Image 1 (tube, rainbow, N blue to C red):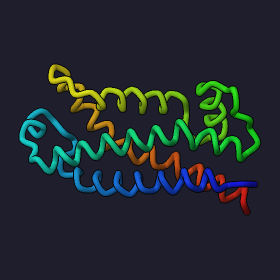
Image 2 (cartoon, rainbow, N blue to C red):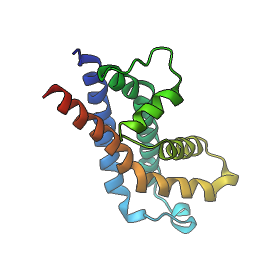
Image 3 (tube, rainbow, N blue to C red):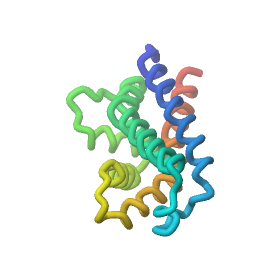
Image 4 (tube, rainbow, N blue to C red):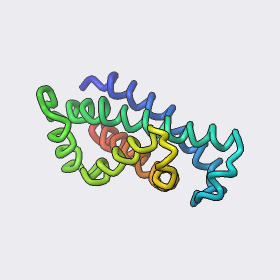
Amino acid sequence: MEFNRLKNYLQEAQLHIERLKDVINRLQHLYPLNLHKFQNLSAEEKDMLDVLAFRFSKLQDLIGAKIFREFLNQTGFITEGKTFLEVLREIEKEGIIDIDTWSDFRKVRNLISYEYPFNLEERIEAINYLIENAPNLIEVVERIEAKIKRIRD
């Protein structure tokens, strides 16, 4: 089997994962974030929150747009012509992530991508969600890597 494309995608994912782990570690002192803490963030902490949102979004986009399909192609499931929902259903059958969790990731990612001042409480809630759930997104990549390793062996 040809794993080069998937291998490249997983290497790219590792770059996002390393930055995510680093920024989550550096933001632990803020968790859970609340309005008072948010209003008193330093410039560096605001930058770290931007990195958190950016890397979570980039990793999720990479997983959803490329890794899921390539992984399924490598396991014999034909993704050409399939909708994302069909791909996601197959990913769920593989035990990689359930559709509801992926949907929650997507909703929060979309919320955090837009900075509306009147939605400050929602943004704070979304940031807390990202800090708490980024490890779950990282686990998706780890599950895929483990399954690919079993296929290769």
